[in-house]
Length: 471
Image (cartoon, rainbow, N blue to C red; front, side):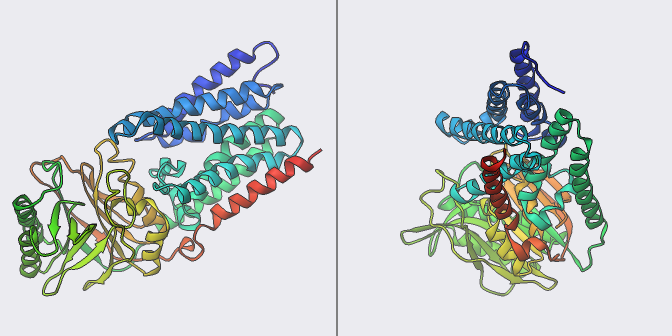
């Protein structure tokens, strides 16, 4: 079966481009519809198996480039230059075109299994290298389009995000080969792998979570648009303290405030506000976590301060900064965990959760609950705000993430959102009280790390080698 014949190459390419570009646009972007990406590459890959290579390759490059424009407004909000977006869109377009070329070449030479594996292998390898080489980590991975597909999401506990991307690309490749060669067993094999993953995920979701639970409070305010300093810092922190005291009176034992609320000098401005937060902890018995910019001599840190009853505050400095906004800040180098009466708590800040190694360190420390002050950009409240949920599934901890200009989110280590509220839902403060389990789940991803990404790189090398030895 051919998608295009000798006389209709251009119309077939136009149709495939339009259909796939629409599926990519709505299947990725800031609020993706998760089923769409499973089918988006199919028309393009089927077209690539036609009599001539150029229609499929041109259509593939065009469709992925156009589909990437679902992120155009996000880049604009981030104040990125147009060249940054064009580089982003062009890199995705180039990688997908290269995967289509390798796919066609191998299948046409009779190396069907090589062609089948080439598409997911090259996409995962690209995502992994981008994760290592850029300051944005895993952000932009196709795996995050599947956060609402909970049975499938459980695969992250074994492979990290890489396994999700692999199967996302494997399915349309198998469908294209099955239709072109009329070999249903190729699609059946792919579906069997997917079925096994979904059975595993369904069982994991059904397993009861043992252990105690704790009441947590989250606070955020979108009324404050910048980082408060001087007297404004003391005043803002005091007002947050008042909201925290009310949540503590309702039963909250852990209260998480957003990132970079105020600029605080090591001995000066802002310390009175911190003293108020400490008094709330002392008076109520609750622990408070507040994000601040801490100035210590020439160094400026994006810091989370932990105020516990009857003891000195703890401090965690953010590791991964958002360029260019946080370029002047000094990155942290250590983790922070502390013991509560019912569990072990870890602390990270916003963009730290875009990367796999640091959260995995917390998983290996058996953190039951991650406490994450954050600050998003409104437009990315779902896309970026929910990236941390993938880390919870991978590393076996539960999650409390409080973001201004975003969501107040409580999720468990299966990826279920237990409670959530927009930070602009109430003025001047949005508050959320929820119960979250205190239970750490051991995962294979904690043991073996990014093994699946490495395997994908090896598979890609094998596929390339197969291209040269296939007759």
